Length: 327
Image 1 (cartoon, rainbow, N blue to C red):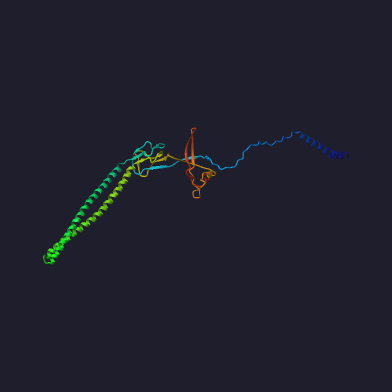
Image 2: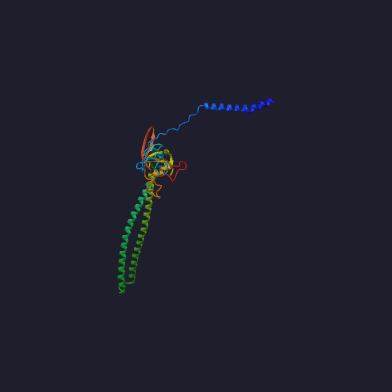
């Protein structure tokens, strides 16, 4: 009976006391630890500011953008006539600078000179024919005048003989002879008048032939001038695709020139910058037109900066670029 009593005492009294002692010791141990220091919020220093009323901007507004230089124009030079290349300028090489009017290429012009000479002779012969026809017309007009005078005389003679026949002072055969002479004179006049009309038709044909020869001569002279290919403007040779002694055909590409007198810089602007570039009085009709805003173009190379003055000319396309969202 003693053993259960002891167990009861241990379970009801000793175990709770031990638990209380352990809990008190744990609380005491935790109280001895250093308490974490609480961080104080930083003290914000006040910054003095000045409050002013907003006013419209009146000065210049600088918008900085990067861009790519593109040539103002590139021109392909082609042969207008065919033939052998007998001269090629040393300047006709990629990267070389050429001046406006400089001869870059010359094609053999022997055949073209002969054609010009032949057509000059054709025009000269047509002029001689026209001059000869003019003389023939003048002579025919004189003969017609004489023939008409003869007809007038014959008519008076017929009238006189008719009066004599009525008076029985002449015979019928003499009357017939006079009338026949009148008819012959009238026939001759008619023939000469027909020749005059034939001369007019011939003159028109000769004038047309001379005009055609003159047009062919102009074309031949153009072809002769086209045997020399000159630089249409001052610029840089981008490509040269012909060599001396080569045989060119009409339309063959000879070279490509890039105009350096002016260049264009294509740049991209943000959409929020575009309203500052549009004129305040723009209407719906010219809403996409940009005013000629002055521009300064700067290029840095080797530690030095080069600057040029330019002007904003146009907007390349409408709307925004889908990839960069810029204009």
